[in-house]
Amino acid sequence: MMIIPFHYRRWEAKYEYKFLDCYKKLAITINGETPGPTIIAQQGDTIVVDLKNSLLTENVAIHWHGIRQIGTPWSDGTEGLTQCPSLPGEIHTYKFVVDRAGTFLYHAHYGMQRSAGLYGSIHVSVPNGVTEPFSYDYDKNIILNDWYHQSTYEQATGLSSIPFVWVGEPQSLLIQGRGRYNCSVLSTSSIEAGLCNTTNPDCSPYSMTVVSGKTYRLRISSLTSLSALNFEIEGHNMTVVEADGHYVQPLIIKNLNIYSGETYSVLVKADQDPSRNYWAAVNVIGRQPQTPTGLGIFNYYPNHPLKSPTTTPPTGPLWNDSDYRFAQSLAIKARQGYIDPPPQNSDRVITLLNTQNRIDGYTKWAVNNVSFVFPNTPYLIALKENLTDTFDQSSPPENYDSANYDIYSIAKNPNATYSNGIYRLEFNSTVDIVLQNANTMNANNSETHPWHLHGHDFWVLGYGKGKFDSVNDPKKYNLINPIKKNTVPLHTFGWTALRFQANNPGVWAFHCHIESHFYMGMGVVFEEGVERVGKLPTSIMGCGETKS
Ligand SMILES: O=C1O[C@H]([C@@H](O)CO)C(O)=C1O
Image (cartoon, rainbow, N blue to C red; front, side, top):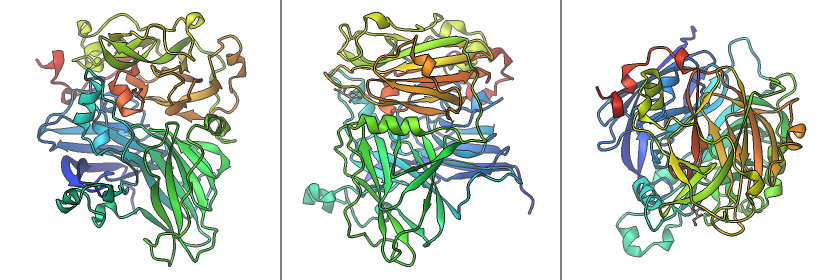
């Protein structure tokens, strides 16, 4: 059979009532599904998606998470940065090449729209004739998510109100779009009105059927709005072999910590007593859990796929065991034979202090005291068309006053400022980013932030606890076999150091992947080589100064 290196998809995004955790809620579907259809392609293939916006009164944009968009920065799908949003009734065409094998994602990148369920997976297989450094019998896809009963609008309104209304912890955890809310806590009249229905097929538990003796590659990813998660299959170890599309030195673990925006492949051998089923369990870590364990079934053929094990489901590590999380992050290294060594030095170091702040009575997140706000005209268009009065031309700060800032205390002055200024990077330069965590505006509290970079993979040079020491910590960087990623956790009261090459012409977001945190300003924007970007398609225009 001839392989056609071109994949054409017609997708329609629309709101539908779904019972993903048995509770009735409007969800954004693609062609009727959430998670949406999986894109299966081979390295080097071109993907074309015609996305029809049938959301009636809401704009849309889709980001292809982990795809670098080399030569197509206008297809990154980041509203306000690389495109105007597409309006109800419009069809927007995304066209890009999947240039690297691995497990990637797609999801809405407009306001907090991702939390309404617009997301899915992208599998890119290796080219013909190339073999992977591990073997397995079957490939399965598992997207983890958290789920809220409040709409995106109620959440966003609360976050941008005085007094501030926090979104709180999710009601459910979803495994491949399925969860289970305890309907019995609701009033009989709500249940009679059909608000919660445990027999709805939408919330039938995720069950993965395995055959004894076979090895499964589970492509596990997280697109949670808030929660850091721990994934475990009762009674089975797993071997991590891939992270964000890069091969990992095989690491055997009992359970996997996974942060929003990350993807991993783990190998699991069906090597336990086949006369019963086992739990697949997802637990909240990093924040005090108020959400029940998310449960799926690891089903040994020929047991019934929905037969619940009689055992107690795994409860995961202690939610506040940050040592456990640091240790797993540190243990993941690039695979021998597949190491892409980082440049030994960098041209520029940007240190980003992560803080929760206040601006005019509003609660915000900021980096180096600047809370990001979107421009009306997407940067990519503004820069190419010289519409430079459309955003703040001053560069955001490269550092914070580390000598006088106590990361373990509530800031003496929590006030921050707004800006839509961007970091302009010299094309082909090597850039280091040091993410520094700190205390929030609540005493003795620091939160985990998964940072995601668009348009690049970065090397993870190190993780540490406490305040980064700019003299001694760089001496401990892993410059031998660091893993490359596009999303990385910044652990509580810690730092994370990254290195990347500014070699992809375009405008790229770098932000906390927690939906509410980016919405509250926790992100920055990098530009490099924009003069090298080809002619922009007019389909990305139509808002702000690009209306004419
Ligand atoms: O932005 C946030 O607000 C809440 C909390 O700090 C409000 O008190 C929280 O946990 C966040 O991540």
